[in-house]
Length: 215
Image (cartoon, rainbow, N blue to C red; front, side, top):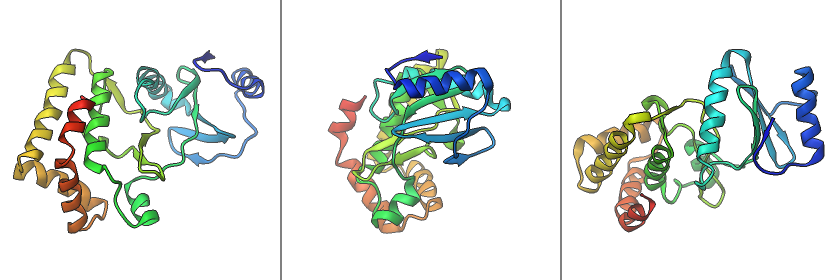
């Protein structure tokens, strides 16, 4: 076990017991093919399936690298390829947020691009197919992310990937039709209306100074 931030004695004992016996007597909050998630008070424990050990290693490395960024959950402890222990975050994906609050997140496109830029700056990037699928928004509209298992190290591609995002940002500011249609397609898949999409673009164009600071 690698402890990054202090945890309660009872949580530490439970993790040590799991490492020794490979068994937990807890009710799962979320089960997928790659992991099982448990809520432990204010902690989130993600235990990786045997087939997903490499993904778990990559996720814990990405989480550790992204700790200075506010959208990443606080990392408390991990065992590479076995589990990660982070803060528990109450948040919604884009569809859930709209259903809960009747509107889109206040900084939707800004959040999408800044989290991507911050992630590349920290040395990781996402496969295109899931680039924004793991973003979540809290009740206050703050963007968060809880899944990093498909992050890959950028290695020598960092500058190139970063500049690609900046070009996409500039294209949307300048009203590039191809770039905007690609973004619209993503929004339509998440059931946004035309008026909501127009508002998202308008809000984003009003935030250029903020985006410059985020870079």
